[in-house]
Image 1 (cartoon, rainbow, N blue to C red):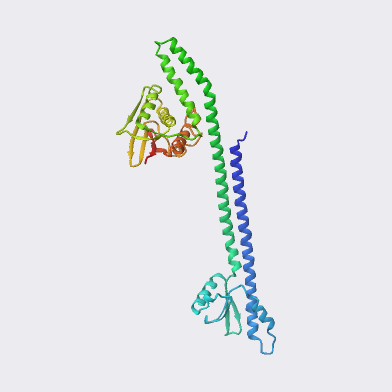
Image 2 (image 1 turned 180 degrees about the vertical axis):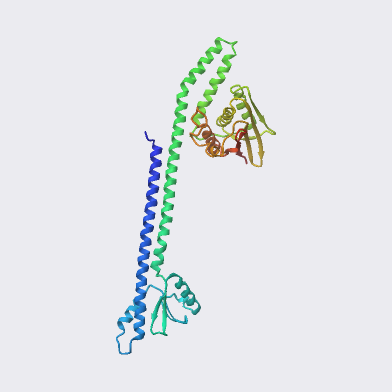
Length: 381
């Protein structure tokens, strides 16, 4: 069954192809019109040249009114009439600011490049040349296809951006809905487990096993609280960052392979604004991913430092590393290199750090068979 995202992707591709097809067709048609208008103006100039020749050759008793009408009918195409020695005889439709002798000569050179001059032959020894430029309409029309392409491109970019924004908004709604529903569904069985744990603790006072069971049930409650906070306004409080990380690591030590060394390197006590529950989730997720990358045997180090207004937390492992190709999409929802899992952990971590804490999280360094370093940055005043 085709998903809504696949349908949207196909629609985006179809729309883009249609827009490009319309732009190309419009470009071709407009270019054809430009060529036709250019040919028409060339014909008019040929008629204008013939009328000029007739006007000069007519004797004083001929009716020159028709020829004059032909010459005066040109009100749009700029023309310059010159002798064989390139001296300007007359001109028409030239802006006043360009009517100086030097500027007229410059126009002659420009017109020579854009249109082939028309030769007017009066005799074997006497000739004149008609140089002409393009009318304002032709100039505007020649630029029109490029304006169309730019307009279509901008419109296409806007539509794609709108579709992507809509898709992201829908994904966020799914995230929030799934998270809150998960928290709601977990609430009842967790409450029941907490009650049963208290009963067992009261009956078997000397059995330490129920103390560990209580820790895991409380952890389930914390996880449910984390899910319930997704999509809600996150309350931050100034806390001891070192202590928060120590608490998360202490919990993890008893729940990962004993062959993994988990250590914290710190030189000073750091304070910053955090949602403790959500941040612990990020640390746990990064450490569990590192443990999976080492197949249960290796070293995980968490380094805390501050540089200027940046608090940096580096999670370093000596696992199998990540390829450069995968490192660029490692935070994408659904991306995973493991056989089991949904590939949502790092995506959630990125959202918690960047959207809820206005920080940054990224792959600082990775190398195949040598390990990976994730860096988290918080900004302090």
